[in-house]
Amino acid sequence: MTMSTTLLAGDAPRQHRDSAAGGSAPADPSFRPLLAPRSVAVAGDLQQHGHAGYEMLRSLRDYGFRGRLYPVHDSGRPVCGIPGYRTVAELPEPADLIVLATEAGRTPEVIRAAGRRGIPCAVLLNSADGRRHHEVLQAARDHSVLIAGPGSFGVLNTDVRVRLNATLTRTRPPRGGLALASQSSAVGVALLEHVARDGCGVASFVSAGDDLDLGNAGLIDYWYRDAHTRAVAVFPDSPADHRRFAQAARSLARRKPVLLIGSGHPDSVVADPLVTEAGMVCTTSLDEMTDAARMLVNQPLPAGDRLGVVGNAGALTTITGGTAKAYGFVVPAGCTIDLGAEAGPAEIALSVEELTATGMVDIVVVVVVGSRSNCPAAIMTAIAGVLDRRPGLTAAAVLAGTPDDVHRVGLRDTPVYRQQDRALRALSHAHRYARWRGRDSRPR
Image (cartoon, helix red, strand yellow):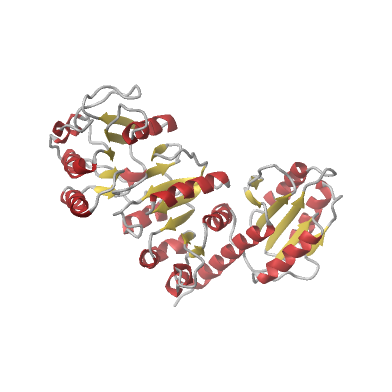
């Protein structure tokens, strides 16, 4: 079914919108309608299961979007139990956001109609090449419509006051403090899957597509001001994009951790001095990014490089101390404590308490191996109680030898890793970022 030209008719003045996005500080007003809209229109083929428009509308409804939904399609019939409209002009109000699942050839006209109706933001799901891409961008500029796309996978905001899932992903990540952004739709899907699997909560997600610049001052300002965003992870497409983003995002990094994902190649952007000097946390895989994010979102930054290890894991406890030194940490004498496999929850918790009380360490790693002779869940609960009483201490736990899928423990959400090297790698990212922020904040 193709979209009728009547969808494009109509003209209306742009209405003033207040810029408050919620939280303790208002986010950038130009991005508020994109990431925290009060109403969303979905235009395209909305009556066939499996088609992008229908699935997008269903995703918004099923996630519990707090605002109003407006299906826009040829017949104007209700879709998913929601009253429909034949044209953008028929909408009872200018929506904050319109999601276009239209045929690529119709996109420029629909953007013009949206702009005339006063809709400030659009997500373009279909790709556009060559002349058509130029027409899309020209239409958006001429009518002051901020676009994500063409080729966007959508946007998401987990804030309970918004509950926006304008994406086609099957993944529903838990709510949290990490903002995600990717120009590649495929990487965006993988990012959401990774953080959901590893228990890293998400604040928002932006699939930029072909045109939205991740270094856009408005987007960076939104993250900077948004009270729910505590760290940002970004995957720009090319090294040039990484460099441009790093230059633009330095002020954001002074306030919140900013993670970039590159490759391990010596010529990769993660080895670019400009990027590292701008305070970016450079990671070389989705797993590494997720591990680092879990440490940076909820934990205090390390106050120093002194690290202690407590465990019941025998040689693994010793190996953890040695690996920590390889990552550049200082392990003071007597601060690698192995209690043996028979140690119970109370004994391990007491050792963690005594070590943290000495003032000899800035970071503590607890290594627990489960067996038939102990109860890993009870040990982790006991450890969590100790760490919750020291909220200013950077901490991580390692849990092995059990099928239990534990990602965090305690009220402070101390992250739990499956391998000690992943925990230490994440801690090293946090330590380097803390040192950079300390240096960068000094008067020049």
